[in-house]
Length: 460
Image 1 (cartoon, rainbow, N blue to C red):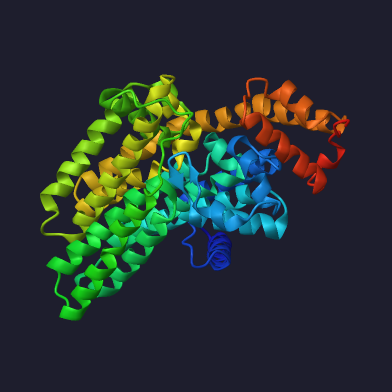
Image 2 (cartoon, helix red, strand yellow):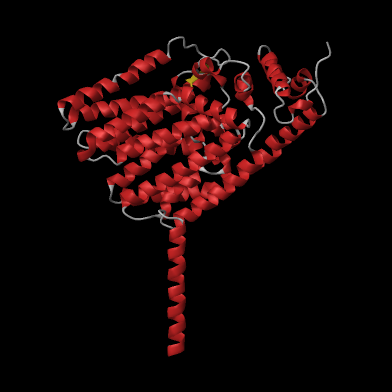
C-alpha cells in the first residue's frame, strides 16, 4: 500500500470512529449494537400498527366503562368493582385519568406500547450487565413483546392493565436478580412496594404480590439484619395476605363463565395461554410447544429449588416462576369450562411473559454452557416465529378489525339509532348487555364523543 492509499484508509477509519462516537452520543446511555437495531425495528413496526389500528371506539368490555369515563357514574366505586376475576384499582385509576385528560380511548394503546418497549429495553440491558457483554440473543425481548401479533393488547386501550402487571412484575424480578448481601434492607423495601402495587393489578397481580411477600419474609428471616429491620419487614409483609383476604370479600364467580372443566383441562388451557408468549404462531406449533414449555419450566424450577437455600436470588426467582405458573393455571381454571381453546387468546401474550424472562435470567446466573445455549435456543425459536407473528397481526387487523370498524363508523354516520346498531352488529347480545351497550352509545352521542354526534335518536 502506497502512502496516499494509507492516508485514505486512515482518514476513512477516523471518519468511521467519529460517526460511531456521534451515534453513541445520540443514544447515550444505550450501547449502540445489534440488539438495539432489532429493538428499533420492532418499535417502528409496532408504531405503524398502533397508529393504524388503535381503537377510538370501545371494544368488548370497554362498552360497560363508558358511563364512568363520561362522568355519568362515579369513578371511585368503579375502581374496586370486579371485572371477571379481577379487581384493577391501579390500572383503572390510570386508564380513567388518561381518558379524562385526553378524551381519547386510543391513547392507552400508545402508553401500553411505550411501557412494553421500555420493558424490552430494560431486560436487554439487565441481561448485558449480568453476562458482562452484549449478545444478540438478548434481542429476544423486543421480539417477544413488541410484535403486532400481540393484537388485542395493542389496539385496545384498556389492555394497559396487562401491560402494567407485566412491567411491575419484571421490575420485581430485576430487584431479585440484582440482589446483593450488602443491600438487603433496601432491596426488601423496594420489593415490598412493588408487591403492593402488583396486588392492585388484578388476580395475576395477587400471585406476584404474594411472591414478593414470600421473598421479603425469607430475607427478613435468613439474612443478616438489625432486629428492628427484621420486625419492620415482617410487619410490612403481613399487609399482603390481609389485602388478599380483603380482595375476596364479596367475590363472586362471573355469572357468564361456566364452571371449570377440572384439573387436567385447566392445565391444558393454561399451557395454551403460557405458549402464547410466542405469539399467534404458538397455535400452529401446538401441542409440541406446550410440551416443551412444560418441560423447560419443570427443569428451571428444579434448578432453582436445588439452590434456593444458599442463594436469595434463586429463592426469589423460584417464588417468581411459581407465581407465573399460578397465573397460567388460573387462566386455565377460569376458561377451561368454555371448551373452545380459550387459552390461545392473543391478549395473554404479555401477562405470561414474566416467567419466561425469569427462566432467561436463571440461565444467565447459572453460568457455564446453559448460559449460552439456553438464550441462544430461545432466540433462534423466537426469531423464526417473529415473521409469522408480524404477518398474522397485520392480516387479522386489516381483514377483521378494520373492516368491522369501517362498517361501524359508516352506520353511525348514516344516522342509525343505538338499537339499530346493536341489532345489526351485535345480534347475539342479550339483556342486560344489550341495554347497557345501547345506553353507552347514547351517552357517547350526547357527549359528542368522536363521530357519535351523528348517531340517530329514537322517535318518542
